[in-house]
Amino acid sequence: MTRTGILAAVIGGTMIIATVQSRADPLKTMDDVGAALMECWSPPSGTDGAFVTLSFSFKRDGSLIGTPRPTAINVEGDQKAREAFVAAAIAAMDKCLPLEFAPSLAAGIAGRVYTLEFKSPEN
Image (cartoon, rainbow, N blue to C red; front, side, top):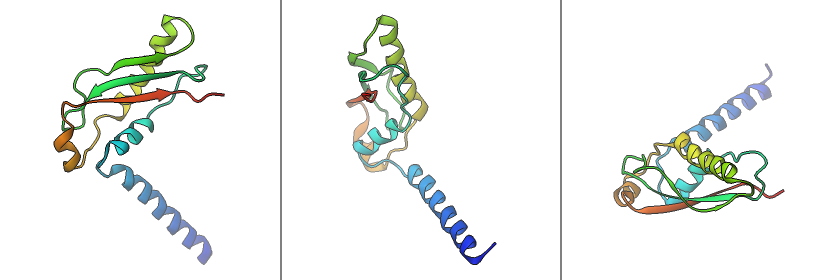
């Protein structure tokens, strides 16, 4: 391997480690929490422009208090389509949890009600 190839491999390895490490950092703000949850979201196919807003509360340990509740749903189709979309949003949250909160965030997060919109891109 050439010197340039070795350097590129070392830099590439460093970037991969830095990316993984940044995701492992405790979440410090609710914007961080929302972004972390959105990393797990993959909308069901054929649901262009659909959305559901979920309402939920966290425990200090990053797990949920109860099950998220839909507070607004806009999904074309029948009841089965709406239920599938809501289930996909709840599954995305389950996939990401528990989250790791920074002590400053964990101190004030427990029991508060938060909402987050899960939406499909419009094509």
